[in-house]
Length: 144
Image (cartoon, rainbow, N blue to C red):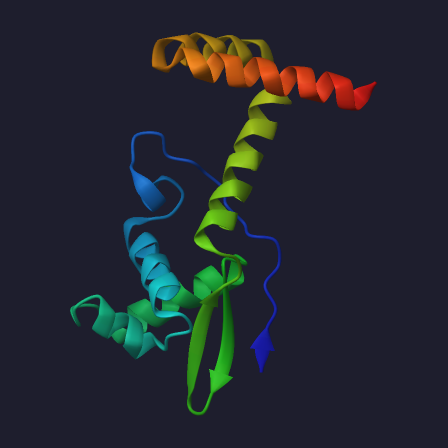
């Protein structure tokens, strides 16, 4: 029996963390990387991949919570379940980024977010500011 995943539920973004721990807990991030790397592993496959130091029940519980959040899909394969990403790593990150941007620009932080983005772009790389200008012009032309 396959459980269909709904739209991924990411509730927070931790700015002080790195990589997937910005959107997941440390164990969740490790498990997600393992699932994407192994392509439809069982719980035991994930534990073996991570070096065998993780508790089976804990690993299974966290994987099932990721299924409940719509991040993973689960499918019965014999006596075990296999897990797969509901989307690719890149698609998930794009979804999270889209949610962040829409949240920033659809709120009272709109002007601050825009000003900060332009200020940071100047500090990082002049070509980024040019890219932003080009995207703005392209959007204006599409709206005409």
